[in-house]
Length: 262
Image (cartoon, rainbow, N blue to C red; front, side):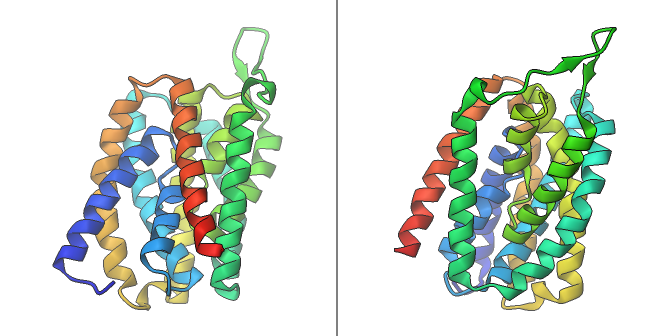
């Protein structure tokens, strides 16, 4: 697809949709954007696709985090610890993606998406009940969360999906976070992780390939506005609905990518 004014407008609109839905579910939108970019640009390298997506995730997460901060839903203590834990994985993931083939990249993406969908469909059977302290305060398993965040940092940076699509289910199911706290805190962690991955791609010159920088800026303009809308709508949507929306979106994108592999 050649880059033109009409292409820029379409990418802004796409970014708006990605930002709205990604912020609504706390996933940053990268899990939608990366598969869409794989379909739109079948000849681009995994490095280019991942670099564009992770930069857009950063702008989405930063914008969404500001909106969630106004709603006072972010657990900053957990977010700072988890965010710091993602940094080594984020840098290594951004470097590792330069050494894989496009077919391998697509196959890993399908596997990760299907795995997340299965995890979410497990529902309450897999969910960890939150622990409370002597005064009723919620206790977060910070060490376990940091270890999981390190892994999330690598996988999400490698695929360019930002990590929220992985982190939100883990925070809900494995760490016992309430859904609406998980979505807000995940966005805060995303801003830290995706920022580190974006800087790594900048150093590697990933945005100088083709129209990478123009695509990134067009998409980012859309997600910044869309993230504000998504955060507002999220206050009117139940946690169970958010989880269902995640599963539907993941399965739809997985099916579409499978067709590109067969």
